View 1 (spheres, rainbow, N blue to C red):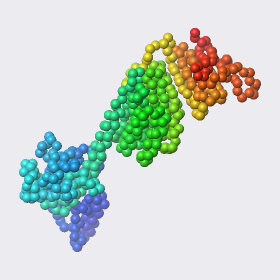
View 2: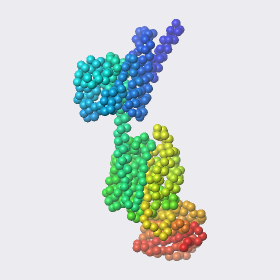
View 3: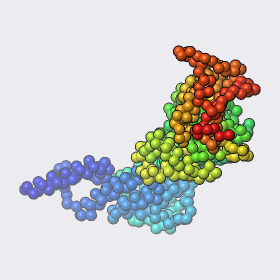
View 4: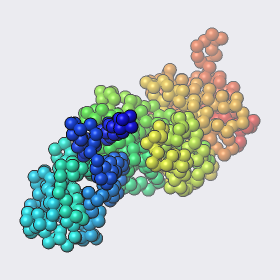
Length: 598
């Protein structure tokens, strides 16, 4: 008695576990009659077949949930075959406006080398399932021949004995048809129909995923192809790279662009839309097109960014974007830059010194469309100088922060020869991508992101008796007082390898004093130019539009100013004032050595 009760309880437990662990079990298997507490004895294969089929269905569902191919999906579905369910061949059709096209097959040798296609209005079982959105079951060859005589001979040549065609629908929309063929006649009982419908649901999800992936792939190819179409004018050389790492697509929210303007200049654009998904890619495509159009209309860098911010805000995408826009003159090497929340560029000097160029900027695009504060900064590229623009993915991917990421890029960029710009780009990417996990694990990498890179080099144009080893040009405007601090940083970076720290401090102090005089005594911007020769002699000139020439004063001990020329006399090896066509330039020379070279 105890043993019988134990067996009864064990069977009940097994039934409950099957219902809890597998939602499909309730639809595939019918419960025993309630009147008899002991389940009827069934042949061994009858008891194990549904249980094994449930496990195969569950395994197939797990396999179809990830990115895969239709061939692999149908292979998983074929595991449902057993003696009571002789599933033999399969085909999945996609649906066009007027036809069904095979997008995958398994054990269907008919026209195996060519895609199989039938018209939607044809007398074919799969076409009827597509037209009516209802399953079509053909339990035997006789039933097939009776219902679809026009296409029966086509099916008879393959050698199957039963067929089922089930529509694949997503939210009421037909996305495909699944044709299942069997090696023996099938009665298509309620259990078997339930199994077919469950399998069709799994196939529907797989088809939807693959169609979405195909659409994303097509978008990615078009965008990447368009980004690769860039030709720099004579005098400038450009190298560009794009690597998607975060979202698994061929393109995400990062982009770059090189635009030949009507005035002969070259616009360089690099940007990053928030996110690395297909939505970010779509927003990026629209924003990139808008920036391209504004540039060709002839707007300056600040105006392009202002219009782009308003455009992005008007799209209601709930995404923002960072961007850096530069207009380069290939003849003079001058660049006019504006920045919208984007990482600063890096300037590589001919001797390999890399300087982080602090460009004043405004808010990212799309955050505050009414804001139009995108100040323009002017830089001048000398021969063999390289400017690097990149997105934050190149800096921070691989677990780096902004500082350590810059150091990593500097250590690669500095020794790379400026004459091989493509090689420099490859090295910069390789040092980052080599630190990333395998592609399959990148979604779990918290700091992996898409990467875009632009390198622009000013090609050498002639030679001077002593070309400057390093060159610096920047403008400090009256409304941007923080530009004085940036100028101090730039001068310090220019002299990073001087042996005498006091002379570096002196150079920074004198530059600050000259800029301060312009800010206090004029209403014009201060243009700073600095050249460092191979003799480690530094020339700094500060130009303003004022006509008043500086005068030597004798300030008292507590006087708030008037010591600028006294500092020049005490700290500079040479200094002077040079009248310009508009305004004047106050300059000085200081050297790392004790004596100034001739």
